[in-house]
Image 1 (tube, rainbow, N blue to C red):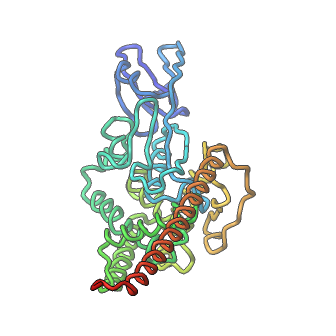
Image 2: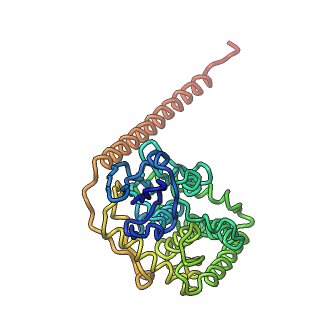
Amino acid sequence: MFIVIDPDPPNLRLGDPQANFQNPQETFPPRLSLSLTHLLQHPLRFWVLKVKTLICFYMEDYTLVVRKPCFGLPTACPSCLPLYFYLKFANLPFQLDYNLTYPDSDKIPYVESGEYVAYNNEKGGVIERLKEDGIVDLDTEFQSVPEWISMKAMVSSWLADAIKYELWVGTDGTSAQTIYCSDLPWPIGKILFLKQLYNVKQQLGITKDNAEEIEEQIYKRASIAFGALSSRLGDQMFLYENRPSSLDAVFLSQALITLQALPETSILRSKLLEHENLVGYASRVNMEFVDASTSSSVPNSHANPSSSAPRRGPSNWRSKPKTKPKREKTKEEKDFKRRAKYFLIAQLVSVVLFVTLMGQVDGVEVELDDDDEGFDYNE
């Protein structure tokens, strides 16, 4: 990231590395004006140009921690992928890392840099936290646009509920298990899956009596949302003013998860495929920001790539994912698997001991009953 300092007055403007420094006003949005003292407080790696002097400051990069990659995406988690696209749209340099230890943690995703950490479960999420802290804000020009606000609310509620329903309730749950639980031992992963399934039904208000009614309502709202988004997009590059915002980041994540992670029998997937411009939009962004990134750099990952099957582009959205060659497990993965095995063995031994002891107690009680039958209390 480059910082241009004018000789007089000393204002700072953040810009893209490819910006024309002969005309520093022509920088990729967002553009920020900061003081040097304020800027130095942010853990960025940047270049300072003042007159003809180049000063290089080396500072820490941002790290985005998400759930593991799968289905040809850097992460298929509906909470993590929007943040990935948001940072990509903002041209904010970051490294990608994965957390496999706590699949049900509401702190994931989070952004960290040095002592700075922005968790998903605070201040409305990581994106809102990054806005408040002045790190990056793509929505400044849209905060006063009523249509944009209502569209963002619809995507964040109706489509988010539809994705949640499809992953956990509307399908067999295979996609959700791959995204959240596939790296855990089977008993633990199954328990976490059932726990999350119960939580999702509670959040959506699903009971035995209203299950069909809720399902019909969810798909009806999703169909309305897709129609509104398709009409708004038209043949534009992005949804509003041909520039990306958090709305684009959220919807594109939902579209790619729907197309690449959900099974072909998915009702939500079939409804999205009815809108060619939305599918083309997702395909273009996927090739530009996902395929290019994965081919040019390898993120810091502790994930198992055997579950990360690529399914990219409209031509492959109806085909089965291809498996990648397995790699040797890291030391952390081996330690985690070993501890999980010890835990299961300990649980099995405790169950066996419990059953054995209970059997002995039952035998003692039977003997006592037999003795009581032969004992005359009147004697």
